[in-house]
Length: 497
Image 1 (cartoon, rainbow, N blue to C red):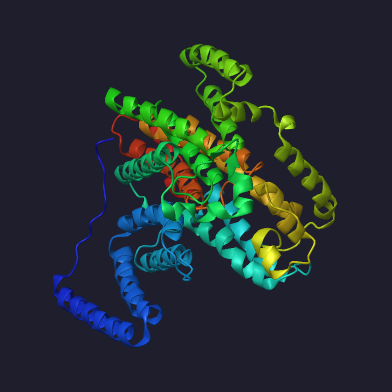
Image 2 (image 1 turned 60 degrees about the vertical axis):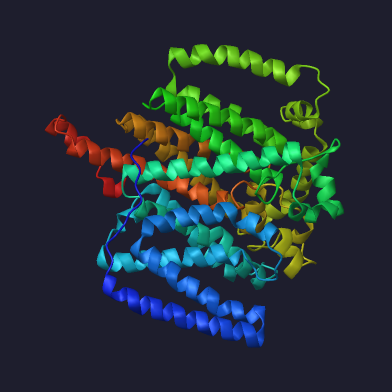
């Protein structure tokens, strides 16, 4: 875990004066526009100058750009909450993704590595992206504008899988990625503790006067916590993912001090997850732990599972006056949950529509975009409380089959890689990713688990790591002097994993 890497490429120092002159000119132009035309227009040349710098950094320092993408996706919602402006700050992430994709194709011109497209996960993602693009021709769609506003969040972010697969090119940088992820998660967890025990800052209370927000997030006399994320659901799912990452890494060959740190972080993430009051998140970790037991299947883990199961059964059945624990218990009694019963009723109402529309009612036809661009349409009347149900409504049962194929293929490739990877560290990392994918394949039913930042980006990072762990292991085994020739022939070519 000590070996970290952030790429640092050489640069031509003779170009530095030219860059400085350009930046000075842009600063002068920005100051002039600020003075004569105000803040709104003066910001444009400033943003343009930052964009030039960022594009240069992406091309010259792609690994820094990957970390910037992770950082930006983690804090973009927090920035939107913090800053009061009419500028659509969410488009900053779209711009960052476009720049990274642009840089990717520039790199491909000089260093062609099309092997990243030659694996099962890549194939199914390409099919999904193509299907979403073809939805613009859906004759049943109530609005083309809804498609335009939605396509970037369901197709553009998927391209981050190829960005991560291309730029994460060694184990050292993979370690850096994981440590950076856990560091961001610790910050979010500490922020939630601040909210729980010391209250909200003024800028965090802007939505707390909205009646709908109060109905959803003020439960049993206390506010559900969302830390730096858009809502309590996004917060709880991010903490669940971070906890599963720690649990998976605990099976690796790391030093005791690192395992203690991982265990402490897992406890921290699971504790603050309960502050969100998101019942669906409480199910994810026990379900993923069962997957861990099945995959590892050793007597020590099975022995440890018995007392944990007893404690778990006591927790979900013990009488309590604690509102957090009571809400935790209702997660395992869904039929007693009024919101769950409402979801079931809504799904029953929309079921005939799904059955008679194999290609759905059009991308973006439900939710906020449906209500905005086609308020009188059938789908606009239904809240998309479930990721799978939303896909079924908008993209039909064909789209539902495709999204389930993404989940199945990712789990299949991950489990296959887990049992063929020899390096214990890479095996533990692959196991962590399997647990996360499995958890979110379940979480996408009660909620929309992978549409909000940062999980809309991090989920494809997870899929990329599943592919990369096998690639790195094959490279290591091919380079190992101890492996015999016959065994080398059995190693799958890393370009077509």
